[in-house]
Length: 230
Image 1 (spheres, rainbow, N blue to C red):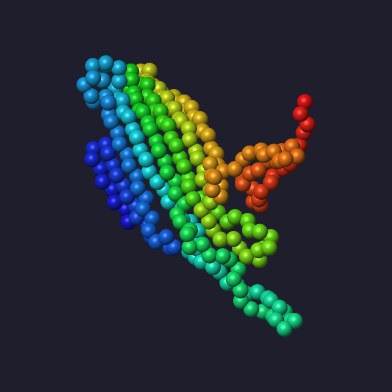
Image 2: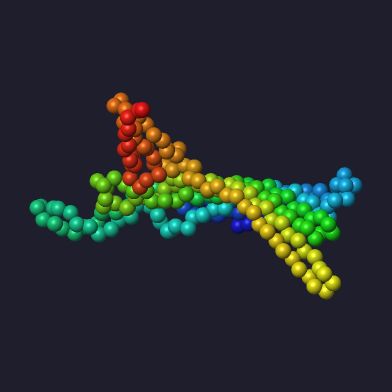
């Protein structure tokens, strides 16, 4: 179910989704704009044909997984009974009743402008995109190798940066032409994995340095390096 309400350059949207085990997911979004070129103090400058500030915040929801991945699964298996191997039914995957939607929150601030009789146009945007509760199947201990790991919300990825687009459109008699250029910078990083992100060196009592991280499929040590001081 989706509901949207707008007042001039202000819009509010609410999307309601329902899926187990967390029955309801509310996905909101907000946007607002201010056309400065229609304000008296900007018109007095005489520089801009169009000048607009934009701001928005919104969320996206993702539950693109199986319908029953939050439940325990049973499958045919074999076990020892009376010193004989017999067939039976056993649990093959753990349940996770705390499974939730994977959500992406996006914040954006923008500026649109045009000058010189709208021949020169430009757009500047700064964005911050955070994907939280990423759905993933972590690796289990080797002692539980028979079982499939339950789907969990265990990671967060942050993506932020800015984009600048400039364009020029003009004509020479009957010949019309246009050119544009785009500049962008983006930083993408894993900001959480199984709780707080761990990436650090630690020194033990013997002076050996060990690198610890939880960005691996099996914990906890990625490598061991030792050296002597100069």
